[in-house]
Amino acid sequence: MTGPLRRRLRPDDLSTKPDHALVGVLRIPEMQTSPVRAISKRVFAAMAALLAAVLVVYLDRDGYRDAQENPLSFLDCFYYATVSLSTTGYGDITPITPEARLINVVVITPLRVMFLIVLVGTTLEVLTERSRQAFKIQRWRSKVRKHTVVIGYGTKGKTAVKAMLGDGVKPAEVVVVDVDSAVLESAAAQGLVTVRGNATKSDVLRLAGVQHAAAIIIAANRDDTAVLATLTARELAPKAKIVASIREAENTHLIRQSGADSVVVSSETAGRLLGLATSTPAVVEVIEDLLTPDAGYAIAERDVEPEELGASPRHLVDIVLGVARGGVLYRVDDKEVDAIESGDRLLYVRKGPA
Image: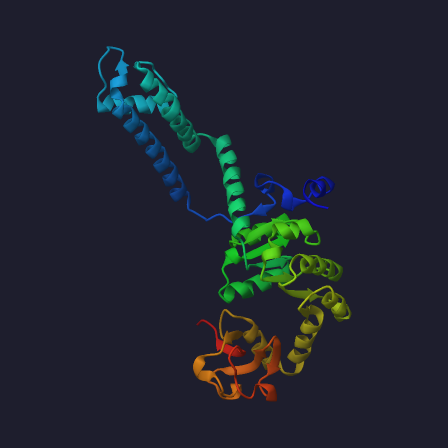
């Protein structure tokens, strides 16, 4: 099915809706500004509109007369512009030529509307905000590429986003999908793009730009939801890297068959750490340190430096844990990677920020 027929059969497909209809579903984060700065910007915009009106009237002052039939001075032009934009309109100064009246219709009236929107147009301000969001959504959808989509913003999703931001990923490059408006508010407060909807539906994932994403993180609370979301995401993004988290190890083969490249079993991982903590608590502390990019040490991946070609990964300055070659990860003591080659990537321990 193509074109109009598909749209008629799927009237609720979010990805085909116009941008203004997506306001409230797709949210592009706003830059946070202080109240003083926001008010100052409003006053500046109002003054700019007023000065523009004064300039237009002054340049065409010969087309105006006051009640005494006198030509207008600059002060008269300033006075006329002020009472005109504020819609007071005493009538003591009026345009008398066709040119002046045309300028009033074409220039002064739009400036008057702008002046009212900036200062007292509360209702119009809401409409302006929706229009601005619709414009930002349109611009974002046309430019978003190579981003990361995080499905589920519970404990696992929040931790995953925190780790990415700690590794230098920009908030604007992360899109969060969830059905809970409260958690999406929390994500938006961090500068993340948010999409409200069920991630098992293809139109919601298309709205999040999954088809253009570089990576997709599945952090759903239920394993069946994770499997369905993975299936849908893989269908839309055949080349994206999909990392999924599940609770039970017995579902690993299902989610891999659904298209996940990497699977993290949260219950088993937590269980191993709990078991280690009873006998070797220091080991757990080291693992937590390696998994936390904010301080101490962290596990990272990098390209090979030219001077490292041909060297053994075990003899580098960095502590190398593994070598990624041709899409396969080798341990540092594997014979296949005795010598570093061009195109290899090193998995190493780096020192985090102080």
